[in-house]
Image (cartoon, rainbow over the protein chains, first blue to last red):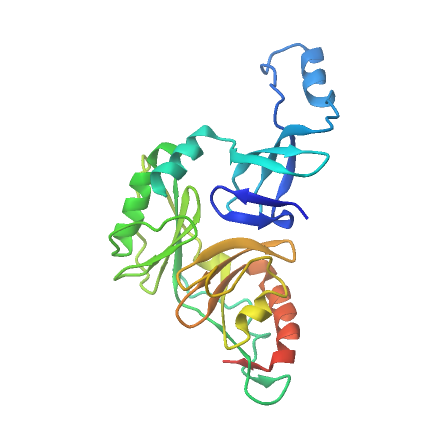
Length: 94
Length: 188
């Protein structure tokens, strides 16, 4: 089972998290061409190795996280809040 | 505020059931306390935390996963930008909109108190948390999942307070009662 070290809650089981998809996608502007949105939404690399993913700690602190994970070994290299403002909040209120 | 009706009054029938001998687990529903949520904006978290601490008569807001008890109540740090104020007094604290939003959640949760020698063991049938005395000591709080339902657990001096979403409380209590019988259950 995957265990993710949530920056707020500590290390928790996979069952508390929800996978949010590829964290490296840069979404186009709202008024961008249909093709740009098609590519951003549907075209994905199928990486064997390290990738950045979004996860939500939906049954914990409900924070969205950026998790750097090896898709082959499941090793997790880093976990940080997806919202930069929340990283600042955690530092200020630790 | 109108008196809250218990969601589990028909299911938490006082009495003794399960394995005979000394009861390993005791359940009681705690009613009458208010639960106010303080939610901050990312740039007002320190200020909202300070106001929440003031509202319960504590000096400092608690750190992540911790609880602070003041003269007027208890403050739980449940999320990066959220605190829960638990109080026996009905007064609702106010919060300026620049600092955040105060919301009365008193009737949204059923508060079940679980105590006894086997309380942690019982909860570990359903919660994926380390509830040992060292990992989850008195004054700890954690949000987690119980049968895919988000619940909040706070350990006080006498046991565990389990905050169950009201509409799921009957179902979750039935599961807990069923498991608790093997340890000897007393419902107060």
